[in-house]
Image 1 (cartoon, rainbow, N blue to C red):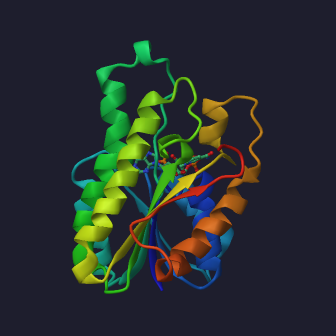
Image 2: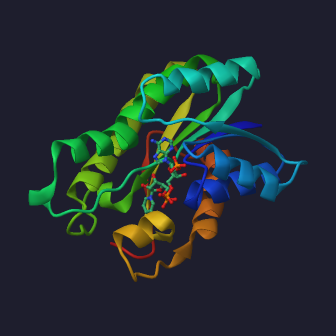
Amino acid sequence: MDIIVTGASRGIGRELVKILAGEGHRVLACARSGKKLLELQAEVGEAAQIIPLAVDLGVSDSYDSVAKTVKQLELNPMVLINNAGYLVSKPFEELHANDFEQTFNINVKAVFLLVQALLPFMPKGAHIVNIGSMGGYQGSAKFPGLSLYSAAKGALAVFTECLAEELKDEGIKANCLALGAAQTEMLAEAFPGYKAPLSAAEMASFVADFSLHGSKFFNGKILPVSVSTP
Ligand SMILES: NC(=O)c1ccc[n+]([C@@H]2O[C@H](COP(=O)([O-])OP(=O)(O)OC[C@H]3O[C@@H](n4cnc5c(N)ncnc54)[C@H](OP(=O)(O)O)[C@@H]3O)[C@@H](O)[C@H]2O)c1
C-alpha cells in the first residue's frame, strides 16, 4: 500500500515510517530535514520502500511539490497521515502574531492545502488521518501556555469532521486522533522533565494500526488517544 507520512524526521512520525515500511508498505516520508530522512532510510534498510522528501510545509509551493512527487512516482496514496506539527508554549499575554501564523500555518493551513493537492491522486477507500492533540479535544484538561497550540489542534479536529462530510461522495474517509502525551522532542521541549506514559514508538504503533484499519469503523471522528488526561 502507498502511504504518505508528514513530520517523518523525528518523534512519532519517524516511528510511524519505521513500522509501516517494516510491514512492506511504500512510504513517502516528508519533513524539512532531508538529512534526517536519509538517516531514517539507512536505518530501516534498503529492502524497505521509503521515499524521503525534504519539504517545508510552511511554504506555499510545498503542497504542489508533494503532489508532483506522487504523480511522478505513480503513487496511489491509500493513507495520508498529517502528523507534522508545531507547538509554541507561551503565556497568552506573550504570544505574538507570528506565533499565531506559524502555529496555524503548520497545524491547520498546511493540512487543508496538502489534502487539496493530494486528493486527485487518492483512490476510493483512502484514509486521511489528522494528528490532533488532547489539548484540542473539547472538554479535556487544559494546560497553561498551550492556548495557541490547543486552539489550532481544535481547528484541525473540526476541519476533520467537515472533511469527512465533503469527501463522502469520493469514498474517502477522514479521522482525527487527539493524542495524549508521548515521549518525543516536542513534548520534552514543551514540558521539560515530564515523563510521558507512552514512548513515541508505542504511540506510533497505535496510529499505524488505526491508519491501516480504522476507516472501516470510523469516519469524521475525533478520537481521544490518551491514558493521562480526562
Ligand atoms: N508528543 C506528544 O506528546 C504529542 C501529544 C499530542 C499531539 N502530538 C502531535 O503529534 C504529532 C507528532 O508529534 P511529535 O511529538 O512527534 O513532534 P516532533 O518530535 O516535534 O516532530 C514533528 C515533526 O514535524 C516535522 N515538521 C515540523 N514543521 C514542519 C514543516 N514546516 N514542514 C514539514 N515538516 C515539519 C518535523 O520535522 P522537521 O523539523 O525535519 O521539518 C518533525 O518530523 C504532532 O502533530 C503533534 O502536535 C504530539
